Length: 150
Image (cartoon, rainbow, N blue to C red):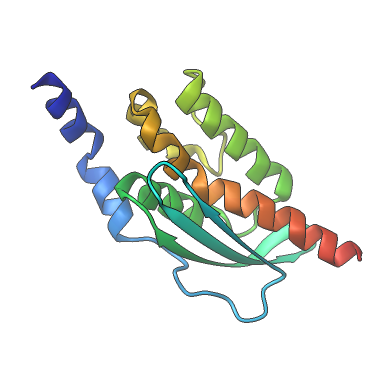
């Protein structure tokens, strides 16, 4: 019974509200880069389109097919992504992974809202889904940077 109560706490009202209100759900026309990532364990997917101007995300679109935790993560990433640099995105991805897997602190601003997902530390089978949005965005930023340099 305790495990069930913990799972109910994990899916808090805040997480469910975030999952229900994901920004930037429209895909972009002519993005600088597109990346689709899939969590093999649960099958969640996130596809990210982005445009970069002066080293910062200037436009962002995402298609999210994930559990509530993956959706909440994508929602928070979507809220913070415009204006972010590749270094900020990669740092947030690494900090989120450390928060989930190594009891690290929440990511730095502008991605500090991901702290709401801290209760998911104990649910290793959810980590990949939670990381999808930042994994896809970091890879898309790298691809966009390469395209601009080519």
